[in-house]
Image 1 (cartoon, rainbow, N blue to C red):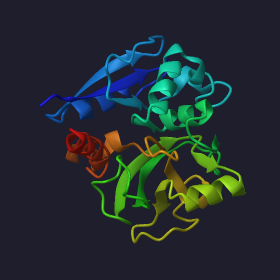
Image 2 (image 1 turned 90 degrees about the horizontal axis):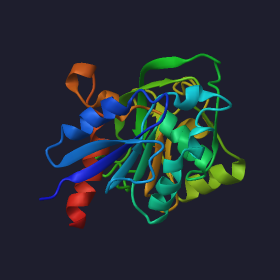
Image 3 (image 1 turned 120 degrees about the vertical axis):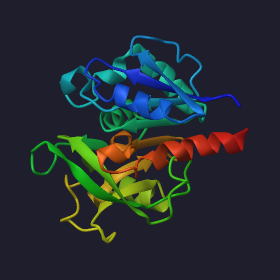
Image 4 (image 1 turned 180 degrees about the vertical axis):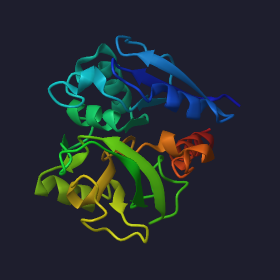
Length: 235
């Protein structure tokens, strides 16, 4: 069986690229390659990952400069074909700045960088990124960001809700959504959304940092398992 190929884009300032590469290569039916941001060839990737980090030092706004990297034209084309793209943390910010997802990211409500484990509710498990989770499952995955406060207009938020594009929401251990369980002040406790076609996912928590028991949680591995499972079913 051919392996599913993950292409992990590396921007100046990416720092979770090798973590993601390690996790993807740990699956026997997957292989990962790093793609420098100046490339215009996605090297035959089946899945594109925009990893976490601080692309271009987060100057102007997080992800604002990375959208001009040559590779992003190919990523936008790739996504437009309905093929899977996942942006994690800074990758989520790049997806928002590139217009592949709706909304914007603001500084955390506390104005402080936050690095800790949080609880997430799987609001939608009917996507190729979340199909291995149970509906409304509560998972424990870390965040590490200064600009994770998701914002969108009321009209956009209503549309995200109506179309079930909200995939992950911050919650407490019991799965309850509350202001106290919302680490950054995100609208509707949003931690991750998909586009209308459901082939582009952006999420602020780091599933690659919760894919090995040595790191304190394996709850993030199902994101990658879901993607791989969908490729197996498609063959």
